[in-house]
Length: 217
Image (cartoon, rainbow, N blue to C red):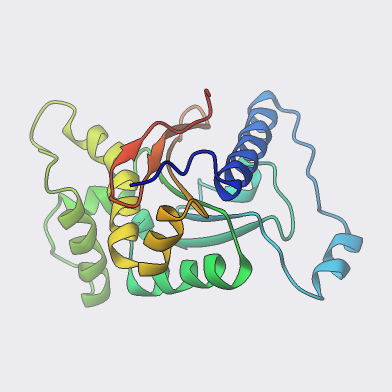
């Protein structure tokens, strides 16, 4: 597989990633700038959107994506569901953002204490058919995690976004092609509820292998 790290698309995605990371650092420091939040910005966006990053995150109300990255109207193309699962509807939505809006950066972000991951290790009693299917999808992606082992569930919380990102590569031919061509960067991230911090777990290549995030480079 050719090295895509020096491609124009990769460099653009890395620039967006650094901007988002800087926004998160402002949030952590209590210095959020709240950019692109004016009525003028809203009026501009009526003509069309040009987000620079797509984010798949959990629906959990404690994970407000735009606030965490100090982003505003039109900055992020956000898809959310319980457990940030790689459902067919999710893949379709992200394919639209990447294919039609030209987004260069895709982030899959899981979080500490995810209720959907918890449910994946609990009994199925009381789950609706739709929730059962969602939880089963998450459980299948975590089959290498032993929930009975010491620290097993925290490990599952961290592994979940990595597995979801890997499934995204497997499920979307468009994402796989864009990754291989160096036109897309796919990052896995983990949010800690108690500290409000986002940890970059690494970037997924077109083969589904996890590589360093590139932020330190």
